[in-house]
Every structure is written in structure tokens, then in C-alpha cells.
Length: 127
Image 1 (cartoon, one colour):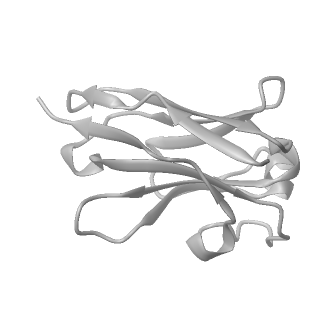
Image 2 (cartoon, rainbow, N blue to C red):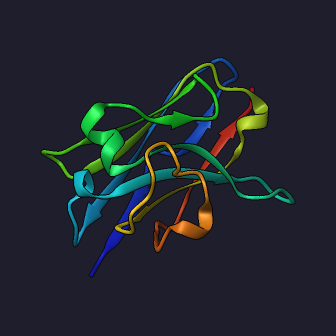
């Protein structure tokens, strides 16, 4: 069974940093397309950062903002999202997702392409 479990969310002050983790089981993350999405109340789900299987090989990821960096630890089969200089508008539920479908290089931002999703982890940026 494919499974993704996010962790690491919580309350952080504006300007702070936070790293989210997504533990994967049932598949090998470096053979897959990986993405982080977020959704704030009343807003559309949007991609934060993503990487295709080809991008993992070349260490290239798409990101909506340089403050957010996706990475993969092959030894732990875990995906991370490193977040820096956080702002109140970054408050949202953050989800990791994966698919083994073929995605073109640097074409990983469509939520409809993803088959498996974690339960989400809440990130709140507030003083």
C-alpha cells in the first residue's frame, strides 16, 4: 500500500523557518514525482514546490518561491519541505503528494496529476 505521512507542522513566528517531512512507504520516492501543495481556508489548493523523477536525478525542482525548497532523502525514503522567512500568508494545510505517472521535466505543478496524498499538516505563521 502506498502511503504518505506528513509531520513537522505547527506554529511559527513571522520570519521563522520550519521543515516539513513526508515519510513514504510502499514505493521508492526517487523513482517518483513528488510535490508539496498547500491550501488555506477559502482558497484554492496551490503547488508549493515539486520535482519530477528526472528532476531528482538532476537535482532540479520547481518552486513557487525561493523560500520553499523540496528535497528527497533516498536513504530514509522521505520528502522534505524546507521553509524560510515565513509570512502570515503562508498559513495553510500543507500536503505531500506523489505519482508514478510519467511527467515531463519541470511539469509537476498540476494537482490532478497526483494519485497519492498525505493527510496534511497545519502550518500557522503568527506572532
